[in-house]
Amino acid sequence: MGQSITNMEGFELGEPVLICRWRLSNRKLPLENRHMRALVARTVNGMQVPVELMAWAKQHIEWTLEQGSADNPNGTLMLIVDDQGRAAMTVGPYVPLEDVSLSGLVRRADRAQVEAAKTGVAPETLWVVMGNELAWDPGEGCTPSGSASLVLHLAQTLGIDVRAWSGLSDAVATQAIDFDEAFLVSDEHGIVPASDADGANGRRLALGYQRLLGRR
Image (cartoon, rainbow, N blue to C red):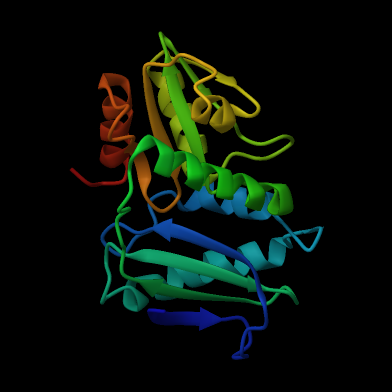
């Protein structure tokens, strides 16, 4: 699984019900505050993630992440919560997406929507460029993930209008809408333009994302 950082009480985890996967950069978690806000907005077994768990996660990220990520400084930090609300963190190597086609990204967004229906946050979302506008599907009543909140901020900074579109991935998959570009926004993979539907706007957002994360 990777190099273990810590767990809440030195226990063995039960059945995982929530796994957050966050990309590191030089042994740091660049979107830490955004990820923490999205974490506390999640639900586990129908109950809100307790503030105490967020405080525990933040404390151990600050205290142990640098040492715990020495083998994978640009890897993936995983926060795992079991069915009893206990948590552990581990760092593993980052594995890039193999399938970055539009259909592949749609499938990932669909799986994330299933998770969002249970937890209230979709870790990956599909976005499309339609003229001078961006459209995405945050999920009904859901809170944006850490990476999605950053893209919303980037779009605002660049003067790009954004609208929520329920069922967007289905509309894209069935070619029910016309769009210019498509990309995935992921807590682990960042902004991933579709290989068969990329364009200047997605690349510009991806570049801004990489700069904010301290990568070039």
